[in-house]
Length: 116
Length: 114
Image 1 (spheres, rainbow over the protein chains, first blue to last red):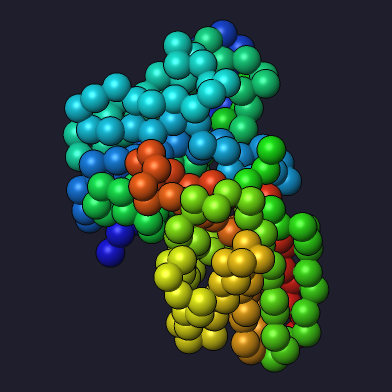
Image 2: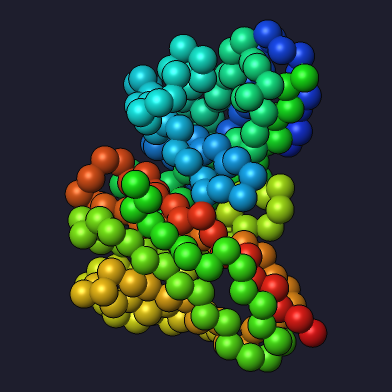
């Protein structure tokens, strides 16, 4: 149990376009989902916390107008990178907890974004 | 300021021996600690966790030790297997804090040689 999927797994887009990444909890309901970004040889950096039915909470330094997060249902959260630039190229990973405030988070497989 | 530190970027161990991965933290408000294993281009996989009320938690080949006074935890893998080769992330959280978001260390790459 506790499977989280992400789509797409890999995407290449041109500078200036927008890209949407989906995160789904397949066999449980996730009231809270998290979006992380990982730079090469770096830690996973939390970008935002997404709660179903409410606005996402963004970490300091993360542009909310650039990284749009929508948590439309208990099993789906989306991250849209708007007007992508090459510096947005990264590995984006979502995670979900099985209950609010859950310690253990289950991670999706990640999405590799390359902006040319 | 890094709140969770994994000072060894890599570790190499012979198959069958013990692997010890270390993690230090600075925030005394952290009350729950987790270890994740990650393969390249994949999301992290939860391994084992420990609450601050305990000093040891064991699950099969994996044991996590917590020393609160030293703000230090370690993951022991015995015996190590080649399939254990991956990057291991230490993470911490404060239940009374925000919403359960994890603070990660930079990871330690473990290589287990046959």
